Image (cartoon, rainbow, N blue to C red; front, top):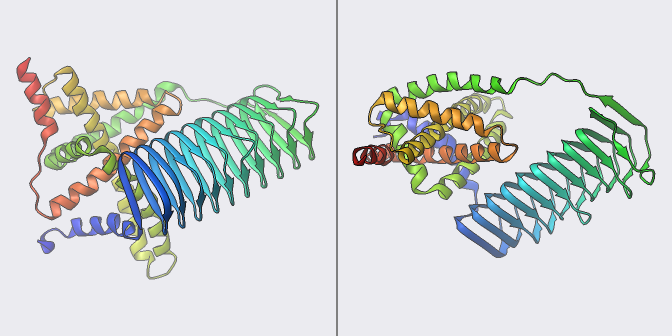
Length: 384
């Protein structure tokens, strides 16, 4: 069978080899991790509670995430509600809706969310890059702070320079900025007379062009064309991959997240040497193609769900394309919802990425596709 499917072998190698280094993994509706983890730890689920000492990195994605105790490596978190406590020896990267940070972080912090609260107990050993709708920074940052958001409130201690871009900026009582403060806004910041700023303050009034929101819908056209091509060339793969997404959502979300993180890192390591660059470049090319494929499969997944809900018959390619375009329009509308809309699309894409990988794996082993999602919509249409 191998000589008949060399492309599948390459794709599976690209996606699955980086995962071999994952020491411990958990996936499920609710995860409670305790004790000691001797290596890296990966988790995906609805509610994740990691109150353990981890000797390596932590990568977690889900609805509600909590990390406490001591992490010896990096932390990467993505989800709806995130809370980070304890001590992290290296970098932290977080993306979510509601984020609270009370941890001691050894190096840099990168965080984006709807609401981000860096509490008074938080300590960041390096630079901090913070973005979101509402930012509250009460902790201590040893390096520079780069912040951007609708509302930015600072009352903490920043040892380096501060750069801010936002609409409503306040430097409150208790703030200590030992470097320069430069900010860009449509109005001057509210700076308390009790705030201490060691360097100079620079204000730049913003007058930037903002593209019309309707321009976001332009992307529906090329995505629709790509989706039609995928449906016509690989109809069984498209149906089977969307069925897998529905059958085990959390498992595929975790796998997709691991692939998203591990594959670029593996490709960069390969390209660090002259010989490895000829492997690393194709790996990165296949990786980018896989992201586009994941976007399309995620759109087909939403299309099948819509068809099932409204009892729309998608038994023909023409009708399924109609459902696809409706799904793409819906996903475009979701992008107008701050943070949460983008987060939902991101999670769907990650799940599709994991589902696609498992579908390729099944196809390589000769498992017959089972496009149940299409059949479900068709059956409901007959009942009507």
